[in-house]
Image (cartoon, rainbow, N blue to C red; front, side, top):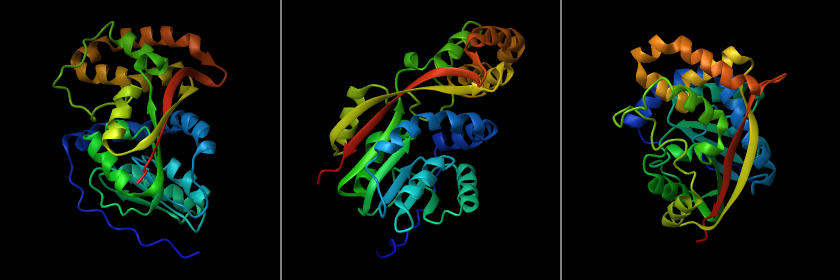
Length: 295
């Protein structure tokens, strides 16, 4: 089989207020908590990977690849005759991905700092995957249209997106605790985009995908207990750094600092029932969404 065609280099990356927020505020925190974030998210992709319509020799897009662990797993599946392109707006994430690929000896994975909404895809890809990346598209229809343009006719896209906040106690319970002490973030708060729950409603997602030209759309519920800390202190620190509780805490600024001790004590009390020999484990729930480019 012939080698895959060369990768087209992305246009100059143009930052937006959302990508600036990711790089300035969230990236350092994600790197600090990489061991929890990646292991937690992997509980969902691990259930999905055995069912993916991807095989040896395929060309694959990994949209919003983050630290690249899914990109490398896909690269193992497609083998040396295939190729996986991981795209993300955060170069610091991609640095980790490239180092992990080099350590693993994986040469059929390429990582590009690029905007999925504007990257000049060619319609040569068999499959697109995204784990908790599409929820943050600034213009989801435009981005999904662009990904569709990168699929050959009959190509498939599978994305994993969070279900409603209420179905994710690992995020909802800490947020509710913090809101006992602090106000909700204002409408002017800096944000990373539409947000982690922007694709929680299947009806909304179906309309987005249909508007982007996809068909054969299906949803499958994925549930998993995820680690939020190896012990209670770490779980509390993690919640005050990331997720909905972290957003409330960050935006409250001085008031959060003044009340930190009380908030920490309340969070510990609330999370203690979830402490197991394996760490603090809490429930989470996502959708596996599959759609196809039919023409």
